[in-house]
Length: 103
Picture (cartoon, rainbow, N blue to C red):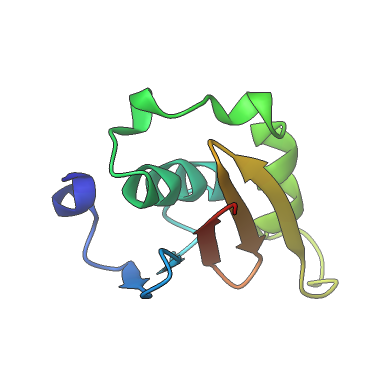
């Protein structure tokens, strides 16, 4: 499983209903990378085996919306929700990615 490739500064939790909750440091990893990694874990697949992120959302736009860029004051919390590879994905500006299967 790809979980062994995770860096030590990120946290991962699995719930009984198939939901995966991961916490990332957006200063060391982009939100789009976090989404791909978390969906791959939820799908029990390699990241290259899941649907491309750009089929669901523009990765650059996602990163720009969610990741603090260090310019100016933080304007508030942001959550982006979309579907990728049969999973609903929530990406939050506080570094949390929540992925659960679509029923």
